[in-house]
Amino acid sequence: MPPVTEGPSELVVCSLEAWDDVWRRNQFLVHGLLGRDPTLRVLFVEPPIDLVYELRHGRLAKRPRLRSVGDSERLWALRPLKPLPRAAGPWADRALCMQARRAARRLAFSAPMLWVNDVTYAGLLETTAWPSLYDVTDDWLLESAPARELTRRRRLDRRLLEAADEVVVCSPALAASRGATRPVTLIPNGVDVAHFRTPRPRPADLPPAPVAVYVGTLHEERLDVELVTQLADSLPVISVALVGPDALSPASRQRLDATGVLRLGPRPYGDVPAYLQHADVVVVPHRVTPFTESLDPIKAYECVAVSR
Image (cartoon, rainbow, N blue to C red; front, side, top):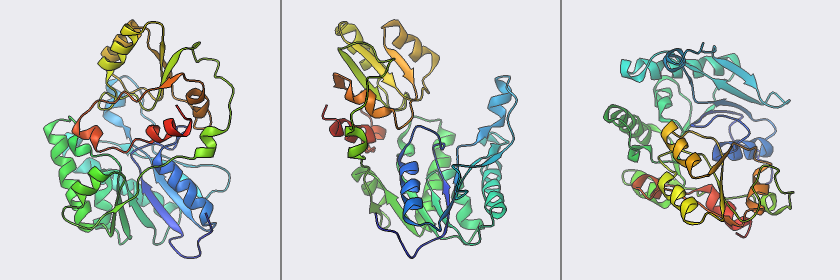
């Protein structure tokens, strides 16, 4: 992409995903923006550390952490601390917004562009004068969450739709739902074809052929665990390998393990093509729900890129 000569030199990204080796939409876009604009500085706000959850599980929660990513000091990641459960009311969200503002001040940001992917940070539109963009990548209003949490999400989503300067969505379903009351821009996902077609050696932990591979986050809202176990039971000659961060419940993990399904864990973006290239078949065993129908899964583009 050609370099840009105009636009924000400071960007605050409130992300639903952490900045780690498992790259997702937000990281691809931020990486591309940094490459286009050599003056751009980015504060990437990651999902928070849940203090109550950590203490409940016998772990000592870490302090909020602001760290430089890479060696240019143009990209900074903040892992804030959620001090209160959301059942306590709006104070938990306000505390997170305050930490994001404090980090921006620490980095001497003067008038950054605000990119909201996590509705938790809707309050920043009211407490700052930053120009704002609401980026809707998943319809979490359709997730099977507790009623209190869904009410909170609807309230924050409505505030963002009313107040954000721009709204961007990644799928036609989201364009229909979020574009009912205001203009939105559809920017679908894509894939770096050259990255996925460059030949790679077979990963050492990939089972022998024939093998079916899924690459993506293992989460009950997306992954059809029953379908995966049926696949493994009905075709025992084929190994089934799941590659990606594991957010499944213990019960789902036990079901998969009992049928011989391999959970290989997350892999860096640079290693993902090897698993797809050496798969005999690539599967995307998503549940069929209104939530999954709202998605534009990147792994589907990856399947096409490796010609599986």
